[in-house]
Each structure stands twice: as structure tokens, then as C-alpha cells.
Image (cartoon, rainbow, N blue to C red; front, side):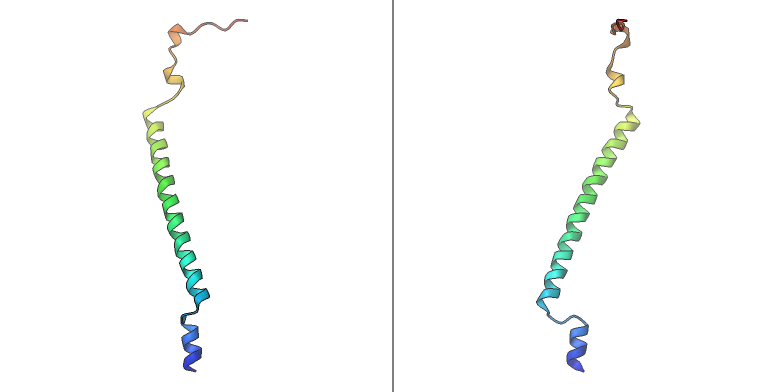
Amino acid sequence: MAKALLGYVGGSDPRVLSEMRRLQQRVQDLESELIRMQAENDALSAAAHRGDSLLDSIDVSKAEPVLA
């Protein structure tokens, strides 16, 4: 009975430990990716609120008319 309980609560099976390490690394990778994407999103949102646009940099008074 004790062996069954030990196995049930996660004894030192190398496959389980290996899988747990792999999953912990995957979680860390995903957290890093999330932080990077949040920073990129924040930068894009700030640029959108500032009104940064390619169209804003065009000087309409110096624009040439379109040839028809």
C-alpha cells in the first residue's frame, strides 16, 4: 500500500521529473514572450495615441498634382 501511495503522489520517476522540467521551461518561455508582446503592444498603442502616421509627415502644400 505504501508503494502505491508513493507512486501516486509523484515519487522520483525520472520521466515525470523530466516532463515537469520541460513544462516549467515552456511556461518561462511563454511568460517571456508575453512580456515582449505586451511591451510591443504598449509601444504601438502609444504611437497610435500620439498620432504618429506617415500621412502626417507629408507636406500637402508642396505636393504635386496628379497628372491625368
